[in-house]
Image 1 (cartoon, rainbow, N blue to C red):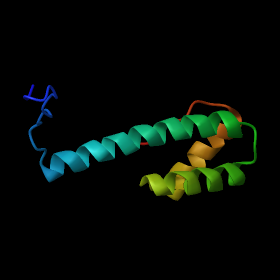
Image 2 (cartoon, rainbow, N blue to C red):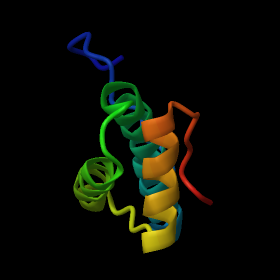
Image 3 (tube, one colour):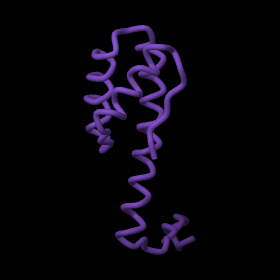
Image 4 (cartoon, rainbow, N blue to C red):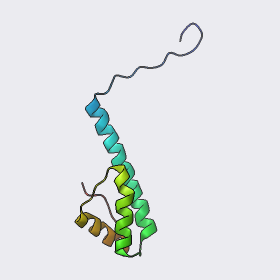
Length: 88
């Protein structure tokens, strides 16, 4: 504590740019998984093309780019009520 009774800020070691980028990527990926799970619950039973469009437009801002085949598979599984997950 300083003389005024205020605690000094704790300094953390600086992360490298690569480590910081990796951390941000992992956080986005985790958020994208949660978003996909929520979409799966809310879109179950809807037409596959609608699900495919919704999943694609929702995940793009999160930096997740899926191939056409991956999108189609995810959309079919959501429509059928099967569990889904992002491909690695």
